[in-house]
Length: 165
Image (cartoon, rainbow, N blue to C red; front, side, top):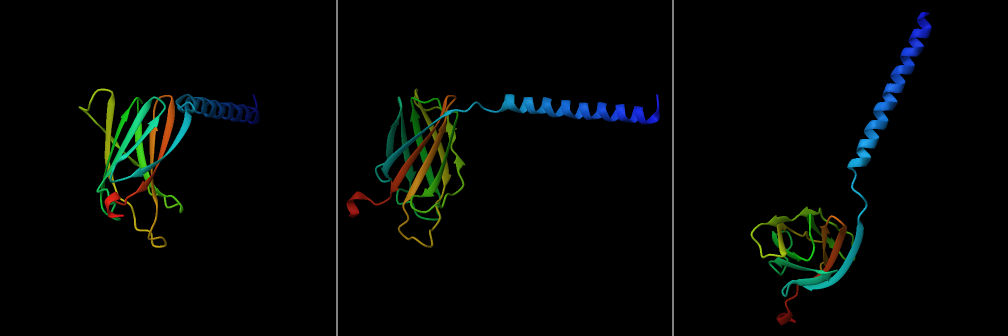
């Protein structure tokens, strides 16, 4: 066999090997990708001094933020009780209702030893001062991922104490 023919055959074998590696890795990545889940969105009003509650299908969500006055730049303790949903992951972020000022979403941590049928998730975050709108209306975007679906709950936050009006 001539030298040119053997180099040509070697090039073909290497090319086929690279294609095989590409297709095998691609099929492995596809098998690891999550199946598209149904997405649901719920919008609810929330006075932070009274707490936030909404229904999601057969489940219910309660969200509390302390301090309820939501001071800017200070730590806020977030607590959410979830019943009727088998949450696998829960995250939240604060976004401006009228101005897209989304902050980084943060994961809430599941707490053990809570009442049967209800899962408790907690975390700490803060909101920033809006330099262009001193009366910024904040929305708590709570994202609950279950095996079957992704539920996004938008709580429009009102941090004015009812007795001070």
